[in-house]
Every structure is written in structure tokens, then in C-alpha cells.
Length: 119
Image (cartoon, rainbow, N blue to C red):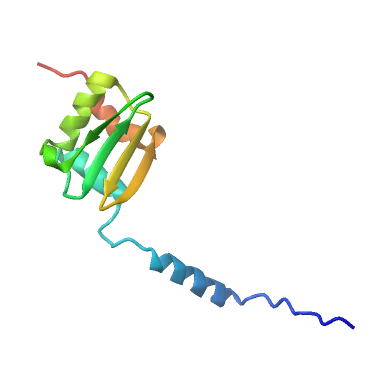
């Protein structure tokens, strides 16, 4: 007679514990939140922080802002919007943790910057 292996299902607390442990292993520091960091930089027109990078991706090309530029993020984005329009994607790297935002995610942050410049 063949030996049958029992297929014991793990208890809910075991599953929860394992998944929490896996999540915590790769957890970012509490200060890391690319959405909050990027929107704060835009709102305050602050320069990029060291180890950061901001890329606006358009169909055939992309434009990149590095921290060395020293320009405010909102000012730089505003210039790009006036020259090239709304990008397809926005990539924000903070300490080598890239985050890609789709148009529906970043459009609310950038639309206020698209207003015509007043002289």
C-alpha cells in the first residue's frame, strides 16, 4: 500500500508571521516614501537631495535632473513642461530605489505647474 503524505495547512498565525517577516526584511527606512518626498520637493521647489535623480520620460527621449543642478524641482519641471509638454512617465530615484509613476499618478502634481507663465 503506498504511503500518503499529509497535506497539513499552516495555521493562519504561521502564515501571517512568515509573510510579515518577509515584508520586514525588504522594508525601506521609515523616512523613505518616494511619493511624499517627490511631492514635497515639488511643493517647496527644493533642489534634489544627494543620491536622488528625477527623469521625465517622453516617447522618443527623456530629460534628467541631477542633484548637482541645484535648481528647484518645481522650477525644473515647469521648464520641461513648457518645452516638451506632459511626460509619459516620471522616474524618481532616491538612494538607488527607483520608482516609476504613470501619468494618472503624477498628473495631479504637475498640472498646477502647467499654468501659463505670467510676465
